[in-house]
Image 1: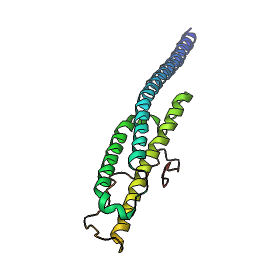
Image 2: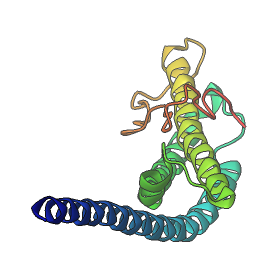
Image 3: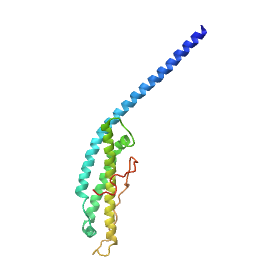
Length: 187
């Protein structure tokens, strides 16, 4: 009788442990699914804001930054260039702020939803492109300014021409895939 009672208690205990493990697993999977739904909702909301900002910044860059500049123009355009590049740097600072949550949610993370995966992939490409284009543009400006300072052919050369400080920005590869999208391209 005692043996049967012990076996019965052992079986009940084992069943309770198994049920507890199953219940724990179901609860954790439910939490994970709920968290992923919250994350995907945040991705959609932030991506739409980011996409609009990135498109506006790209248009602004096309209108204000792209174009040929020459050392012969430095005397008359230097102040204007510095103002435009200062505005450009502010846009990059705003870009950093607008991309914070997407970087947390998208970089090196995977999602089952193909739309969310596409949004994250597009974000990574747009983020890298925007920062890397900025660095390219500043480097190109500074190259022209260096040529100006070292030129012996410029008449009435100004003494106070210094490089534009690009700030904290340098070429980025936020997803560590070995590709710096937009690096050394000027388009």
